[in-house]
Image (cartoon, rainbow, N blue to C red; front, top):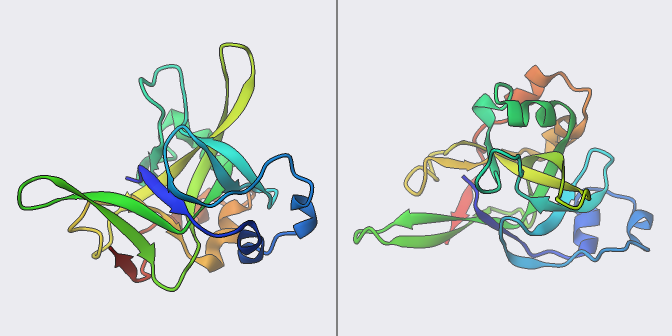
Length: 197
């Protein structure tokens, strides 16, 4: 799973990384801030299919859920009612500098591990968005991060990890007319080397 992550690069670095139009961000009503630790239910920057960065709340809030749904299993995403339609029509990219996971030590106490992708100041986690309405009738956008089985480096820590997209596949993932069978093939454990601290 992915329950916390960080994004510690500047707005300009994100614009450069995703080859965005700087003019789109010169007069924005929101400010892109560096965050060392990002928690569920907070508003964070995601890259939408219109190729713009936007603050979105982390965690789907369907009426049946006791707590926000922050992750979606990539293997079953086209079968689950909550995620099927967002996967088809509302995909997004969640930029990150690292993510956290907890590993049990010899005393069965959990140790917090910070996990980076080697030589990548920013990497892209696959995400999906959904819109909900609060009790006051106000609409808001949410996101969930897709997860997959752990790669060999992650297995000693946890059996799941976020889907980290290859940079060459990011455009295909965001393009909403891409065949979903092709999109599904992108949702696999990363082969890039991880740095675990």
